[in-house]
Image 1 (spheres, rainbow, N blue to C red):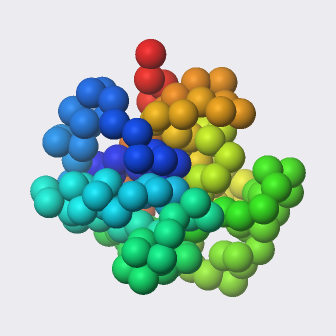
Image 2 (cartoon, rainbow, N blue to C red):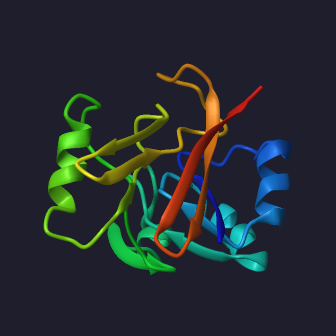
Length: 159
């Protein structure tokens, strides 16, 4: 299963590189901060989408999406949360949110800073933002490939 992971799109047009990857994916995961429901609606037209709302999302998105969720992709438990508050300490808050959950991958956003690290056997995956490099070294999104319990993850830098 190939999954395109994104966050913090902030209603900006999606880059062609990302659109091309979405076409080849089985699923899209968005970790919040759409800022406009039209982005969610467009993604849902062609793909299965898992998403949460972010701190910049209005009531139209908050009524449709949870703040966080846990679900399964193949044999892998996935936690999904945008994040909130200051960038400092965000990873610890994300870890606490999913403490005790049966997850092997935790996807989050908020900082726009890509992260692809395994900590205590759990993959913490922040795809960065494909449309805004504020506080980030570059624009990016992520790809997860899941086969059974095997997980491959990578950050795709948008040039």
